Image 1 (tube, rainbow, N blue to C red):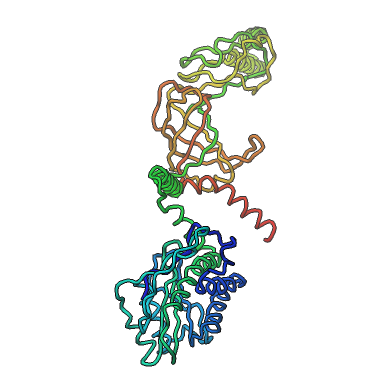
Image 2: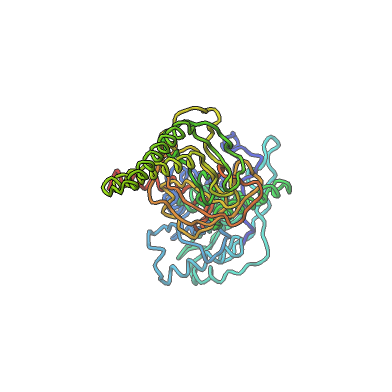
Length: 504
């Protein structure tokens, strides 16, 4: 019984002339020959099959098995060993008595990480020193303390022999090479030496092939494990783990559900607004207020020219006086027919006079309530003509406001009355005022080339410095969603719409 399999000495180049030296031990030459056959295979299964068949032909074994750990990246366990190839071509996965003995022998050698043999082979003599010009190709083989070989003894039986050699790659066992002679002499120490040489050469190749044939998800997991494995430098280990922790925190932050707002441009308006219109055709005579001025209820704002109305008033006054004089004469004559006609004409003149007085009164536009002028700068239009019904000035309350938010048509389905939000005005960027949705206008309008719906919201707090006409941005909380979904929602919805347009 021998210790761990021998490995190729790092000081020797495999392509050098040392391999062709006649002084190279027979065990090394045989191992290199078998290793060359494995290199010609194009898959892990083919390489293992080539190895077992070559050992049967060259060394005369009755059965040869190669067992590897199923998951080469996981911690090596004997229970995860799987038969990769057998020399007799039988189904190694079938639960037969022979396969159970083979598996037990492989697990025995794998668990003890040592070459096991039954019957025990005689220890080798120390190898001769290497020539001065070259270095030794293989590390020396040493005997170790006795090992447990019950499974090998059960496999060999009373007339056979069995040996198991661990396959070690990168300092980690990955499998076992198991050989058996059903009827024959015991396995000699030179043969064990050949098997150990072969295991040292074949293990890295089998591990490489096994790694190359992994499925995609296993490659990803193994790559993450290799990246996470602590390097020799403590500083690099700290940087790796700090980077991984930061990546996990970023992913968690992107997937953590937060309040999902829907926003748009917003403008501030008075809760109540009154538009002052021209009561009749006329001309602007005088302007007493401009947009932004605070006004009181009943305060004059605009005076329209009244010269024409005054002339018309005088005309109707004179006609009324004439009708009254004629009415008095008719009463003196007791002319009832004339009296009725004159009475009707005098009433008509009085009505026209009252109408002109009312028009004169309405020629002065006054503030309907205490508020602020938000529209209508007529200070540069004195003497300009106006038509009846023309909007001249707008007055709004200065202490009660509403917010009009323009919501894109792609987001309007998520907005409902009663939802809360906040508005930030461009003039007051440090001040965010809470609001609540009151009404949604059911008709879309076009703004900047896109369809928007106007959502009316009431301010829950009256902040300082608010004035009608201010603009800013508002956000309405419509539910909860992850940050990643908020960033990619528009892209996903556009992709869905495009797919529907293409495929229906």
